[in-house]
Structures are given as C-alpha cells and as structure tokens.
Image 1 (cartoon, rainbow, N blue to C red):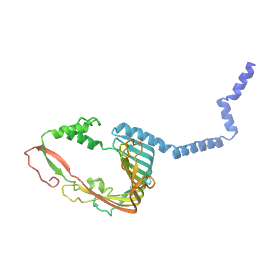
Image 2 (image 1 turned 60 degrees about the horizontal axis):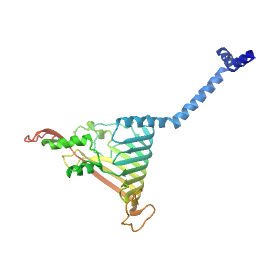
Image 3 (image 1 turned 180 degrees about the horizontal axis):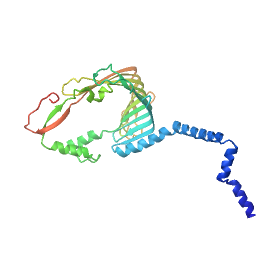
Image 4 (image 1 turned 135 degrees about the vertical axis):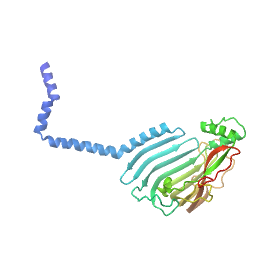
Length: 319
C-alpha cells in the first residue's frame, strides 16, 4: 500500500529529468513561445491598466511626504517622452482655504520646437511649446485664513480660530523690527535667464469647468459654470518700470452661468429667499459667449540694504 502511494507521488511530481525529456519529446520551442506570449500579454495588460495608477500612487505618497501645507492626490499618471505628452487623471489639491479638482487631462510640451534664447520674452506670437487640456475642472474657495489672521493681528485678538504658522510669526517679528531701506530689483535683461524665454506662450483648453465661492456657514454659494474655455497666457512689458513684467490672459468661455446655489449642510435660517429658481439655484447671469481679458503686473523684488538713514542706490537693475 505504501509503495503504491509513493509511486503515485512520483508520477504527480515529475523530476527535472522527466521534465527535460517531456520538453524534448513535445517540441520545447512551441512551449517556450507559449510561455513568452502569456507573459507578454500580462505585461501589456499591466502597462495599459495598472502602471499609470501605480505611478500615481507613488507620486501621491512622495509629494505628500514632502509637502505639508495641503493634500495632493494623483489617481493615475503617465508620460510619453517621444511625443512630450503627460497624461493624468483624478487629480485634486486640498488645503484649509480652497480645493482644486481635475477629472482628467494632459499637457504637451513641444520639446522639438527650435529654441532661440535671444527671442523676445514678451512676444505674444512666439512659439507655443506648452499646451494644456483639462476636463472636469473645479475650483472651490471656502475659506480665507490669511485674511482672518491679519484681522486678528490688527485688532489684537487671540488666534482662537486658526493656529498661526511659523512663517507668519516670523513675518510679524520682522515687521516689529526697525524699518530698513530697500532697493527695488527689476527683472534681469538677459532673456536666457527667464523661463519665459523657453515658454513664452501657454495655451489652455478647459472642458466643463466650475468655480465656487462659499461654505456651509453661508446660505448661498456663488457658482460659475461653463462648458468650454479657450485661454492663452503670455506676458508683456510692465506698465511701471518698478515691476518685472505683466501677466496677460486672453480667451473665451462658452455657455456661462453665474448662479447662487443653496449651500449644502447649511443649518441657519433662510431669511432672504431668491425671487426665482432655475435648475440648481438662482441664475444671476447667463451668456452663450464671454470674452476674457485679464492683466496683472508682477511686482518687483525688494532687497534690504541697511538701516534707516542709508540712501537709495540706483543702477541699471536697481531703482
């Protein structure tokens, strides 16, 4: 009986010599081809469905380990060096003041474009090397802790709502010190020293966007909904010689609706009812096409040079 069981075990688990004889007898090349095909299919399935998610998970862990002022999540991330394309999905950034959410999108950096370091940084007709497309964009502002901290400091109140940050405490100590004269440093005149010589123009396409301002302590939340946005970012010389440059954003929005929406989880009394409701809330403004032209100067850099009584120094880059 024991010999019969041992014989069955030997037949169930063949030895290395038996396996080699079996492969030699049954054309081992075909078997290795079958194994390689199965492994290749498994690798392709992993690269298609799971590799980008694993990279997104790793990036999320690394970024949140280094960045402590908020939470950043990346659902999936992939890139192609040949086409200069970076794709991402389920990205959001949350801190104590606002949140930014992106359903999916991609950016293309046209690295193959000829780079001329001597080209004008403020040329709006320059090459567009960076193109960004975003779907399902949401920007929500629900708090302003910096403003509350300044009000508490101005009126001498205890910081009961918010804990002051180390940087803010350091800034208060600096402001309490004696005033110092400053020099204003304008932007360097060397075009190659600025990132705008490499990326002078950025084009952004946003599909289905939403801007929200409010929280659950307010009865209404201001929402701006739009379907398509085509924006172009560039720079131009500043309006004042004390500034570095001017930000310029031009574009158009389609199917824009500005609404007052009832805030979820609001537990207060609703004393002022809107005159009429359409869909989600009260429509303040609605338009099929909206053109945007936004500009803002980038302030110059201030460099401390000494105590009061020292004179202002002027040079080519300092005013």
